[in-house]
Image (cartoon, rainbow, N blue to C red; front, top):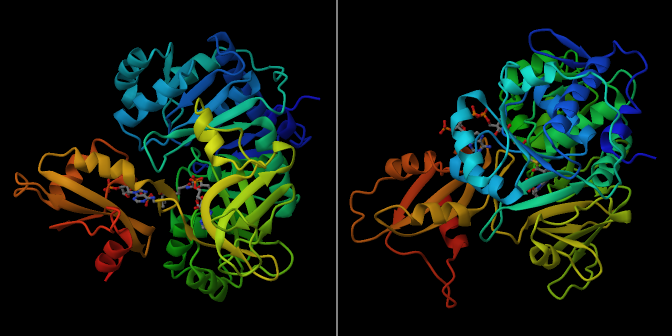
Length: 505
Ligand code: MLC
Ligand code: AMP
């Protein structure tokens, strides 16, 4: 049996070749037959370009049908897909290319020149471009390729994708995801959330992270369902499209923004059967307000780049606000104390997860065996860095994090990376970056800066402007405060809790 993720999904595609897979904003419909032939063309192109099973294919492109063909073509060719947020800047991309050493880098047309320079510097042999309107050399080259391809035979343990996550210290880490990992998660979620004939997914998430690329897309493909495939989240448009859709997945910011729409009523979402939230904590107020306005109860689930989804509230049975539900079938979740001792229900501790047959947790960090080893316990549980507790009914609640991480609008920001960038600016003695509650993004990246003796002219605007070209926009602080000194404990560690208290007041 072929354990290639594409083969597993394709075995479930509709028998009717004309069944729609993607419905685009301009009304264009792309059938499942076309998805198969297009992904074959992209797969053939990769093979012809010399991409061998296990070779990485990096893509920093906007969401589009062609970007999806590239992902699926990469799976079919046995390549390892490496999606990159278009918000990443030059220095960030240079690191990813240098670390992952892809055989091909696909960039946006407007960044072709920069991509070629970076490819040269990092010895990436081939660059193509792909625009959001289906333009660019990749599309032209794929059009010349045969539209049939026997998906390569993959073992479940073969890599299917690498997704970079930033780290609390130093360099970003590439989480290695296997075909088995992604397939097991897709099939479990498909079943757990009761996907059925007639489902239509409203897909507004970006396709360069776990949530949009794997959780949402794989569920729809595994069900042979159409996706209303939208370039980005837009609350008024989401409401219009919900009249034709049945399932919606989003980060909490999407629900906050939907609640600001006067048109969000029971009637507006009457066609919908399922709302899923994840990637960041859904505030109990948002959960309750959504239920009040629409009569629909959001299913909150919990997961990570390092393995996909771990827990979910149930489809049938109580969906409990403020919790992320139960461990998914095939995944073991435990809460342990500082000494590693299992904690009883009601006690807060570190959340650790383990997958049966290595299906629910990733295969480790790319070229970082020591880091990988550190993150796993001797009995094979992955240390998530999240703190939580089970209640007496077995629902897991996420209470906080023991990693210094900010989640802004569903995107992770590690303070250390931003502090290093700020500290390198002239006039800065030192800085601390914290997350403060934000009504839209959940948490807002905020910098607290100490000037050095040359820093009199340093302003908040100046710091923000200097950072914008260097790091992705979502990581740039929304506010900068100046202080004389950072508060430190007796060990010399900055007391970020005091800064959070002071500046959220
Ligand atoms: C954009 N901006 C953000 C931001 N997104 N700032 C903080 N946090 C964010 N998340 C900034 C831009 O840099 C820009 O700044 C300005 O906002 C406008 O950009 P935009 O792209 O037009 O913004 P918008 O469309 O409003 O995007 C916000 C958003 C988007 C919330 C809709 O970020 C989003 O779709 N987030 C979802 C991310 C996601 O898929 N996460 C899942 C990760 S997987 P300026 O200054 O230039 O104007 C995962 C595992 C799991 O976590 O469990 O699922
Ligand atoms: P990422 O590295 O982008 O995959 O982010 C994973 C992190 O997002 C987890 O470790 C959690 O901290 C957080 N997360 C995901 N889902 C939830 C949720 N439902 N509630 C709270 N935090 C979440």
